[in-house]
Image (cartoon, rainbow, N blue to C red; front, top):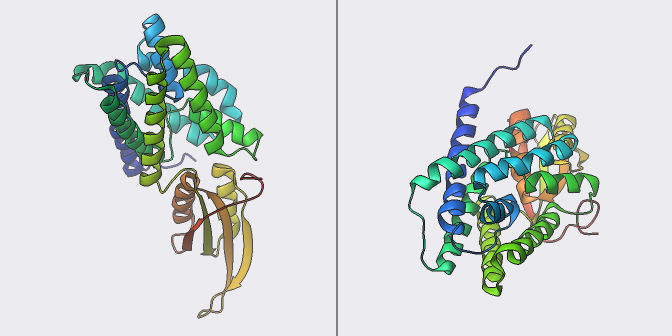
Length: 285
């Protein structure tokens, strides 16, 4: 039996893709493209291809994602993969066909860097909060995390950001100022996403008091790749047996886990606390 389509959720997903994709499109096309500084991620590689060969940024992003999707397919859940492909396609169309209709900023490069960092950071956060992504580097970092659980998503993302910025600096921009602007953009984007989504790299811990502990643990493992522990508890008032699911993860994953818990057991009692340091498999060794 086919799963019934939730048109409300589908509408919210499309709205997030359009709003987030438009913010990313304006940040990339209207502020970064002519500012002559390297950008991290597949957008940065697409900008390099634009300057070298004149390939439109959105089209280049799609072309770059094709081999990455095939290589990373088995490491990504089908639901997340298809949602991400949808978001990537919408953002690419907005970059190539809608953003060019708006004025291009040709002022101070530092202002262009700040504006791009703010717009793209907010745009990506909106898309991530709907359990999606724009593909590209997200696919690679998640696949690396699956293959090497001790390498965190944040660490893998940071290394790839540095490599992309260096490639852009060496092949196209060839100046120290451009390199510094690229670093500034990456910092602003990461910081803003951190504020909007409770943080990507900081650790969080959750205690979920529920009667469907195994279902929640299975969802956490399937969609976030994190391990969880089920503790046995008893309700102080009801005296009924309860499962207490204990899980530590980064903040981007915690947002997804909170949504999944609400879908599985709306009556679950969820406690989320900051973790100053998490040591062990999947985190810092």
